[in-house]
Image (cartoon, rainbow, N blue to C red; front, side, top):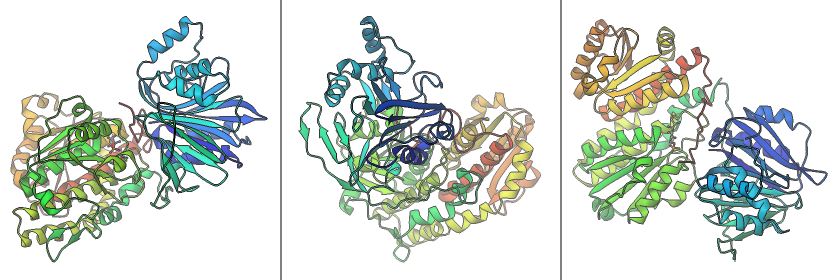
Length: 606
Ligand code: M6R
């Protein structure tokens, strides 16, 4: 949440900052701002709303030192005053911040007792006022002393009016990367913001403070001692950030799933042998055989992928698998026995709760397998092994292609564990044949876009939906409901179909359509009974079924067929149907699809 960009060099940093912020705007888009030096004087320009509003404000401006920010509001409403950079009362210090300062109230009260007058509602202003208070001519020292009093999470970049050629940065529990150039240096919350300028980077560790000038980067630890820094090279490609011919990134990404699922499975299995080879998994067969229990931690859509995986791993490999919501798990005292393997799933690799859960699992000695889309992210660096999704940048805040790629990689993982145990070569071969067919089956689902759009038109005005399913279709129903809530702002409940009669059925009526996800052969008859129950209460019913399912057309109001596949892989195809439905409903309702209100792509605060 919140994107940070900084530049010290000889070029026009304002242009570079706008371009950099554009690449990380998905981190937050409540407001944006930039701190510059004009004729050696420190100025801050800010605008509420999308980046384009800031672009208008800073047109024609130029500065060789800048800090820039795109905000996802935590403390303080979305106003110009609360937009970053935040300055201290004397306007000497400008700060941009990603994170939350947990002790800001006591620090603010203390400063107010000393006579400091605050002008924003933000926790960030405490940082700016503290730095100003600690400043005695040395900005680095002032930042070091100030951050030592902060509790919580922060990545900050600071400018001071007396130092037009310098930026000081610091972080704790929040990612920050310095890009090292020739005669210029960068800072960002995400390597994506700077990779097209330099591939040489320094990841700032917790508690460290860095002083950045055009030709020097100096790093200091929390004891203020200068430390050597390790320059790493970003190896991933400069990604395509364009929308192409699509109206929205979300639709582009839905369509990319034919290719992204292919990428996720590319060179990861041998169909002839019915086996999977995950080269980025640094565990030997005997270590994999020693796994007795698996714990999966994740949030949101990644959590739903984890839920599908728990069914898959238990069913195929017979290994007990639990799925935990990261934000709950981190405050438990988890039991991590010998033989426990942890899987952390996160598209961004930056979700604060998942990272905290990973750290707790590591502290308890678990081996962590990360499942992540962003190379160089915190999860990718902290996991013992990281399996990359290779989905390409997912810009739409609503996760689509990352979900289906997660399901592909997790299916391969489950199959690998199964083959190491009881699954025969023939069964392995059959499974892999089915996985290999998934991309072309996604293409067939996409061909149903017009039918799904027509159904969306009929139902776009409803304010409540139920998505129900059993077994693999249960997590699918949670994911489908999340999509509709997130981009169409329509209330939707994902429910285990068997649980409906234990309470929620009271909500079912003609005003609440029921989306029944029936692509699970084992439980089909049972879900059909639940469809009948919903119908008996005048709910309109939309059924997603395998092609050729008999009798359903006379029962459900609408039927969407998906190509036949095995139940374990059906969540991938059903996800595409539900993504399209949510997209079309959102578009018909005029919702902001790529950047839904109140959300951000990387949830780097608790
Ligand atoms: O980057 P992560 O996979 O860790 O993100 C987790 C959730 O924030 C994310 O999946 C969120 O639920 C999506 N916006 C849903 O579409």
